[in-house]
Structures are given as C-alpha cells and as structure tokens.
Length: 324
Image (cartoon, rainbow, N blue to C red; front, side):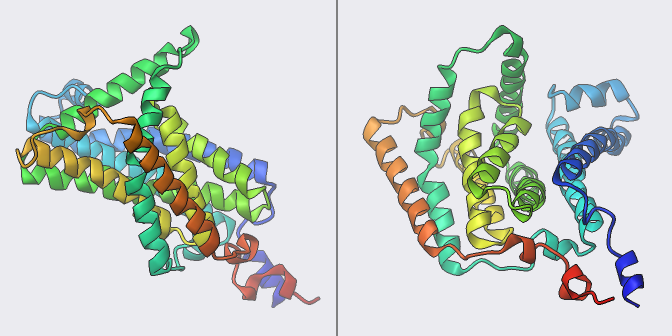
C-alpha cells in the first residue's frame, strides 16, 4: 500500500528548487502567450472579428468606452491565465494539495489585517517619494525601451481612470484591484516566495528577490523602486502570517485606493487630484515613519511558521511517515 501512495506523489515534489523555478518561468511564458491570444479571441466577436482593431485595443489605443471595457476583459483573462493558473498548476504538480501549498487555508488574525491595511495606507506618500526618486535615476540607452513601456502603461492607466461612471469604476475595481490582488499574490507570494521559503532560502533574500521579480513583471521602470518596496512588504506580510490572504488584502487595498481617489475626483466629489499634489517633506516623513512602525509591529506579532511543513503534503503522504 505504501508503494502505491509513493507512486501517487506529484512529480515535482523532490525536484531541485532551480528546476522548479525554471519550469515555473517556462509555464508562465507559455500561459502569457496562450491567454493573450485567448483574451483577443474573447474580444473579437464584439468587433465583428476585426483582429486588427482588437490588436490595437490590446496595445492601448482606445476611441470609445467599449474599447476600454474590451481592454479590461483581455487584461482579466491574461492576468488569471498567467498568474493564477500557473500557480494552481504548479502547486498541483508539486504537492497535489493546492489550497495547502498556496497557504490559502490559513486565515490571518484581525490585528494583523488592521496593521497591514494601515501600513499600506500610511505608506502612500512614502511610495510617491520613491516614485519621484526613481524618476531622477538616469536610464541607460540599452534600457530605454523599459521607460517607453512604463510610459505606455501610464497612458493606459490614465485612460482607464479618466471616466466618472459607476460602471467603469466597478469594472476597474474588479479587473485592476480584485483580480491582480488574488492572481498576482497566488503567483508571487503563494507560489514563488512559498517555494523559496519551503526550500529554506534565507527569508530576507527570498522576500526581497521576490519583490524585485514582482516589480520587474510590472514593466514600469519609473516605478521600479516603489513597486519593489511594496512587493517586498507584501512578501513580508506573507512571511509574518503564513497566510496568502494577508498580502491579498493589502494588495487590494493599495490598488483600490488609487481607483477610488481617481473616481471621486472625476466625479467632482473632491476638487484636487491627489496624484498631482506636491507633497511637503514633513508629510513624507510622517508617512515613512508610520510605515516603519507598522512593519515593527508586524515583526512583534509575527506568527512563527515552518514553511516546509505548512506548505508540504498532508501527513498521510509525507515521506517521514513511510515504513518499509
């Protein structure tokens, strides 16, 4: 019987970390291409199979509100395919128990949720300072294309955020806040950071390197430093709680705040676009201090986690329990 159980162990269980990461990257690239194509297929019937028009919309060229909704549809399909599906498939191959492998079965404590949300909200001016600092870094000629990608991403974001309709607000919230908070956290924290921690990589190295990968994946050179810091903070939330849901909540809070502020400004409920306000130095200092205080509290309230055990197989198929 034990021989049968051993045979049922998913094939990636004992593969070296490097091989697992290489396969994750390969599957991610495959899904990125596949679901980019699938997203366009979903959109094509709405434009009478005019593939040139669909491709133009996917590149961020909008002329009507329908184009904006179409882009959001493609964005949602791509995000779920690239990030969520890759994480789910690899987790199945690694352990066969997706929920446990991705730390989805552990609920963070209420006090950790409160501190995480305050930390993200309090850090906004600090993050804006990092963006401004990043903009002063000269870009090597070989990396100019990254800056152009970042400008295109900002252009698309502005186009999506400029409306004041409730429907667009809800669509943006779903696609730009809910979907990435879940899908990206599944991939970067649940899968990759989980793999590193389970493999006994130094936690600081694992968190910082995963944060950098998270930042690079956003293809926004002008925001590289800010997204890196935010991604590292999300990684620490995962490490401190042992739960995927804490970084999911914080990630959603960060994205939703931007969408909400843009919406209430466009709707005329506030007269100043917060993103365009000059932030005084003292406000940035206060924001940074609040962020550091929240980080300090998290270190004190951290739930000690053995990730090798927490993210591994249930005891029934744990190799330690086998007898010959």
